[in-house]
Amino acid sequence: MVRRRVAIVISGRGSNMEALIAACRQPDYPAEIVHVVSNEPAAAGLAKAAAAGVPTTVIEHRRFAARADFDAALDRRLREVGAELVCHAGFMRILTVDYVEAWRDRLINIHPSLLPAFPGLDTHARAIAAGVRFSGCTAHFVRAKVDAGPIIAQAVVPVLPDDDAERLAARVLAAEHRLYPFALRLVADGRTRVVGDTVVVDGAAIPAVGLFSPLPD
Ligand code: GAR
Image 1 (cartoon, rainbow, N blue to C red):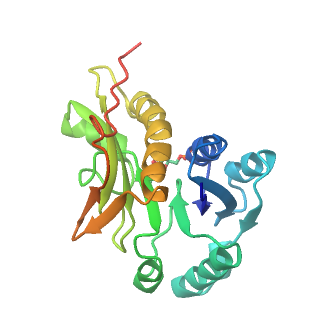
Image 2: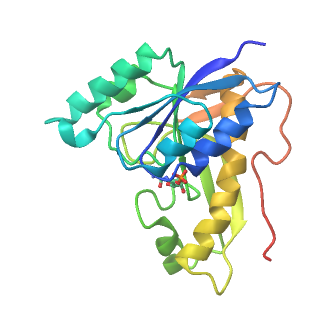
């Protein structure tokens, strides 16, 4: 089995990164995590990656005068480590069009809502304020617009009447940790094709793709 070489880019806690690292430990998983890059030197995820034996690099965005310069440094490092695919896991950066196009359909992001609803920040508070009955998370290929791009898979969780942003975030995060390894497996297996603005999944039908609805406690 050929394992695709995957880098993960983070800005903070790194729990999705940990879920991907854990998935890649399975003998039949079609990807390996070769490197973790953080734009934040204080990101808690850096120590977690190191503890898991994954090499890390910090590329501090504040040291670069222009957005394109940071993106060029990131691009260089990802190529140096031989990344074929890059997973954004809580990577809170707006990227230049040139960078995104250079990595077209090889950058994957996870966002804690059912996109295209609620892109950007304060996702859970906005979902609660809108009164939606379901929320969830989305794994998608990255485009230059924030939290937009062809959807690979989604997971759904209920929004409960007494939810606050923190409770909903925790329920969605548990789904993220299942969805992201699932989505990366589809891509690494070569089962995804981007057709226009959508993703077609080849091969055997997947029953209820990425539909996880953990019941309330
Ligand atoms: C996750 O909930 C992820 O979906 C979100 O940041 C969190 C990072 O947590 N990403 C975005 O909001 C992207 N727009 P983690 O560092 O523990 O994986």
